[in-house]
Image (tube, one colour):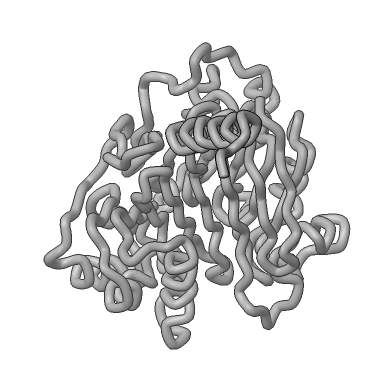
Amino acid sequence: MRASPITLLSVGVLAVTSLFASTAPAAPKPVQIYIIDVEGGQATLLVSPSGQSLLVDTGWPGYEGRDADRIITAAHQAGLTQLDFVLITHFHRDHVGGVPQLADGIKIGTFIDHGPNLEDSQVTRADYAAYEKAIAGHAHVVVKPGWQVPIKGMEVRVLTAAGDHITSPVAANPEANSYCKSEPAAPDDATENARSVGVMVTYGQFRFLDLGDLTKKKELELACPNNMLGTADLFLVSHHGSDQSNSKALVWALHPRVAVIDNGARKGASPAAWQIVHDSPGIEDLWQLHYAAGSDKDHNVDPDHIANVKENCEGKSFKIAADADGSFTLTNTRTGAQKTYSKK
């Protein structure tokens, strides 16, 4: 039987539609960010649209490999079989301690840090020695402010390292910071915290800031008299929400849209720092990895915004998928609930 003209036309339309569908460019992949619970330490995994990965810090040692296991689980969830870069912000145990166990459990490409330990502390010297031993045989880069991690698909710029900071602003139009006038002078800090490697991650219009455990005097060198950093869509609250960090002049100048505190049940999320972040101009949401059992109800967010509400927890995390237009979606893995923040 001869096909009718209408049938032939329908087939032709379907063929053309199929052709355009197969040749249309695929939607750009988002940047994935996993803020992993390591019980008051830090472990933040980023996966670029190219599929390359960057882990910032490795949590604690011991605990039968708990933190390394949580990091490896997140890596597998992201479809990774190796970590391309592991950046250590500084050599305190809750940041560098997990390196030996992690290196035993997953392939690691390049380690990044600020250079030798600069703190006069026996504990820190011991942790640095364990780190040096664990990274022997791996590629290793010592960074300076202004350096970029060579990762495809997103920009990761070093802002601070070994007590130094960028001299050229990353903000498009740096402005005088009006919050500096009322900011009290900050004390010197001889610990590794002040030597933290801080980074700004940029993907199109999206900006994520992680300053490690940078303390107030070094924060203010970035923020005053001019704000050298501009604004941030997502801010990993410094130093687990400690009041040794998170100066009002810095946090308020950042105008973070969303902030996450990587606190433990009894570490970080101090009321003073919590309040500064909570009250920062333009903030849409504040999230916590743990309910701060050592604080009070007025200085904890709603349980829906907490990944772990019980002290004896399952180590739930936050996952963020960020698009180049500045929009991003945060998932609380404890509840499965998602919240999307619109594009700029």
